[in-house]
Image (cartoon, rainbow, N blue to C red; front, top):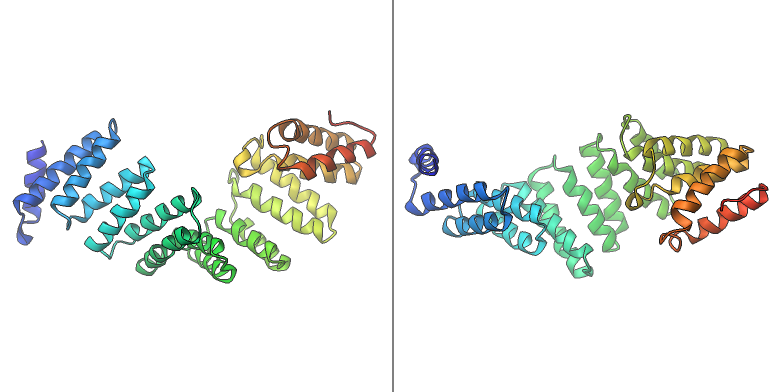
Amino acid sequence: MRTTLTVLLCGALASLGCSLSAKEAVELAIEGDKARATNLDDAVSKYEQATTIDPSNTLIHDKLLNALKKKEDWAKLVQAASRAEKADPTWASFFYRHGYAAVQLAKAGGGPAQWSDAREPLEKAFAVDPNLADAQFDLAEVLMNLDDETGALKAYSKAIETAPEKTEYYGFLAETYRALGYNDLAEKVVRAGLAYVKPGDKAGFTLHSLLGDLLDKKGDSAAALGEFTEAKKACGECTDPLKGEHIAFFNLGRLQVASGDTTAGLGNLKKFNKTVCKTAMAQRYRSQCTQGASLARKAGGSID
């Protein structure tokens, strides 16, 4: 089977010439494909050998990068992507995966230099393929970590302009505006994002929560309560700590108590107390835990 595939591929490339080294590279890649499901390390080894033998084979470079990304070997992915870019600088995905891997390395403890390493390949990825919105989105995170808020705002905006249906983008842009004190712009971004949110979209939790907070700060408690209610609906059980979903219980409970809906409010504050304040997350949410207990006492109840 391997020989047949090799012959077919070389036959298809006959007009370009198919050297013995090219045949060997294809054969190794086929072996890598077979090993990928059960032995990722072996697959990576086969692909690496193949790209060394025939560095011009773009498809094998692509296989290697995909395998390294699956393996989460970010350092090797950066190196392999750099070689792939030289083999074919017209593949935007090579530059994107280079930048993506550099971002993962920076997140793992890198400083400004490591974040800077991610900037150029992400910029090149979008330059090669202007439809690659993820490159602009990741670039925005890089620029934020390089203290370039203006550049980050432009990158987030460009990502949204390129792929307005990707609702997860809006929350990051809105949060950046809010952090810089541009609450009106943050609200506009959130509302624009909510227009694309569909049932079951987890981005709804982030956007409704942000809008609720912005409205609450404007003094519109009734509207804020409505948004926090929608946020709670969007996250369902609201148990994902990585997404901060537990805050839904506090946001909703706080305004329910304030509006006179004491029973429902205390119920949500109790859930927050149990899932957050009585766990390892208590220190992170120290202010909310203290405020929740105080609100319960004032309402004549308890969250314990």
